[in-house]
Amino acid sequence: MATDALARWWASAEPRLWLLDEAGPRALASAAMTEPLRHAARLTGRKLRIEAVDLEGAQRDLGGVCQDAAAFPVLLADARSVEPNAAQIEQLCARLSAAPLLAAVGAAAIWLARGGLFDGRRVALPWDAHWEADQLADRAILAPNLYEAATERMSCCGGAATLDFSLHLVARLCGPETEAQVKEALFVDRVREPGERQRVALQARFGGLQPKLTQAVALMEANLEEPLTADDIAGVVGISRRQLERLFKQYLNSVPSRYYLELRLQRARKLLLETSHSIVQVGLMCGFSSGSHFSTAYGALFGVTPREERQRKLVSASS
Image 1: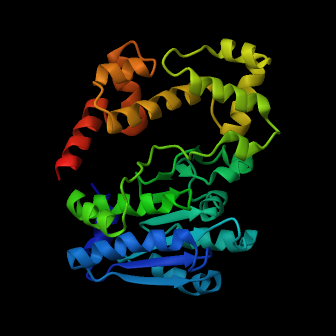
Image 2: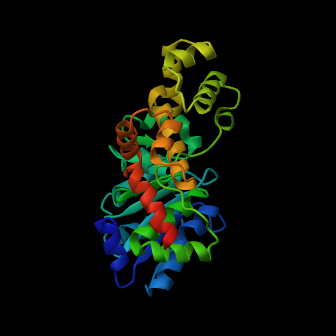
Image 3: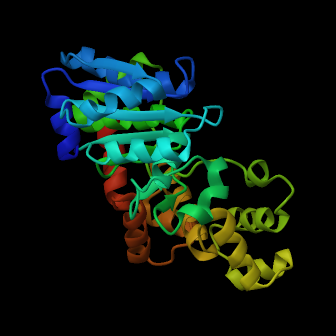
């Protein structure tokens, strides 16, 4: 179900999707953000107005946009975008603080996190912004997920995940039938959920700089059915448990036990959605000997129980 602000925006006589698009019109994120909503508007008879401006245009228009309940400001930027200076970020965030609804995609999520708009909130940053973690961790809750869309301040890591984010909004605003039609029009087979991690190999993220961390995560991924202890992992890779914890905190903004648990739950979700194994079997295959522990941990990460996840899959398949 859509949040109140999101629902009000879509219910406006002429909803405006207002883009501060520093990624550029040819960037993947730009089309991925707009096309699903454009298709949904056409299918449901909405008169959606899409506007795109650059940083200079934003400075001119943003005050009025944030006072307009029919406007949904979305900031898009990628690693190639020219980053605003500190004064520009401060001004952007001061104006956006009044917006009832907003989203930041790609590098723009870093800008708004720096400016305090995600203080105390979860924010999905691009994986290559891990070096920002120490600066931002005391303010925002840094999520390794593809996108965060549970509140009126949304974020997405960008790139291809922007398409999942936009289709997720379509489903919330218009329901599964319209979402299915939009997916068909865009040749999309599956929409990745908010809780799914950014699947980037650690080797690609850190090169050869952190081989111990890469080895530790590889061990976890190879031992999902019978999880190892943190001491076991540290011993195999040749470091102390404290050193292992320090690596996970510094580079993954997590602790080994939490990261391992989420790997197992991500695997469980894939099995629930893509196989016919029973829920009990899935739990055992992912290292959960207790059904109640599996259900509780799964619900805490994804917001639904394994049984509800399987039911959603069946409903989606039948529709």
